[in-house]
Length: 100
Image 1 (cartoon, rainbow, N blue to C red):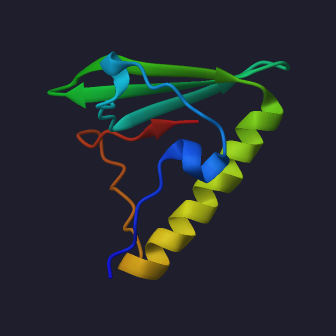
Image 2: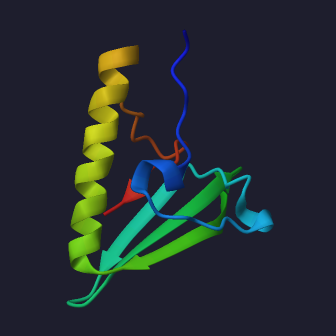
């Protein structure tokens, strides 16, 4: 029997309204992360043919940024356990990536 994928609200026990215009999500292949003493800013960009377009900006508290880090690490570990190790992208200039 296939694993049933849970909705975010089932997973968290919190009803979440997802506006129609963002239900499909956005694709990103470049990210930039910046911070001040009070907040972290995550910029997600789609880069194509040496031009980039900001597709999403997330601004959050330092504590929540750290919680996101741990949740992402946990999910990557589970992914690699199931599907194998994720290869890191080459850092050459033609390959989008991320700025710290």
